[in-house]
Length: 243
Ligand code: ADP
Ligand code: MG
Image (cartoon, rainbow, N blue to C red):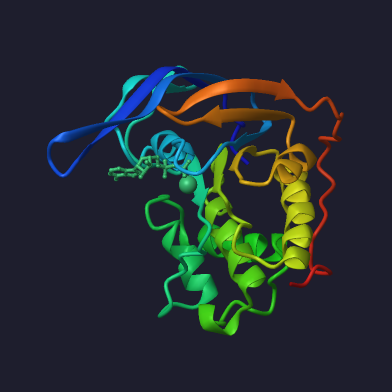
């Protein structure tokens, strides 16, 4: 696993231009530091700019003011240093689970054996061993989302960005995946930034909860959850978890 990163977001603002003319300010003066290996959640009302902020951190959109620094370097372009998981799994329907995951490694510069081992171990990590050749439609919603998590992690990113990843799942599957996310975080030692509508989920999972508000999106509160969480790598596998 790559060294978990230190992320510094400094005075970041962002606007969209709607219909080619109207200016929409979506983020205003965002300051946030994310410590290496932290689990940070971002909560806030719909439309306050949470997904926009994650896209900026992911390097999917470089059109913003201020600085987003990873190890002191301005984030630009996509790279394996960040994995991202969305509410819908976004697995390509015409590819098997393992081929979907393999796509994330196309630019990794790894040899075939290293790629194959990374794919195998990440499928095991999310409890999907045996489903390597399954197509997305053959997986339940929870399994597909676990596949998306494996895809997000397979390149050994320093940060995993999660944009309401459990929002579309039923309550029981959501609970199982919350536990699984926390265990994956412990085992992988990866920095996690989770956007969620669910304050209970944020408190259950994270070290730090950041509250945003709209008009334009800004951080209005930040609090440490204060629950000590073990960080040691347990080497756990999650094959016993279904959903
Ligand atoms: P959240 O994830 O908190 O619901 P978003 O970041 O998706 O918020 O959106 C913030 C605001 O920006 C919303 O008003 C949304 O309609 C608007 N918005 C999002 N993406 C675009 C875009 N590509 N072009 C114009 N407006 C956008
Ligand atoms: Mg969103």
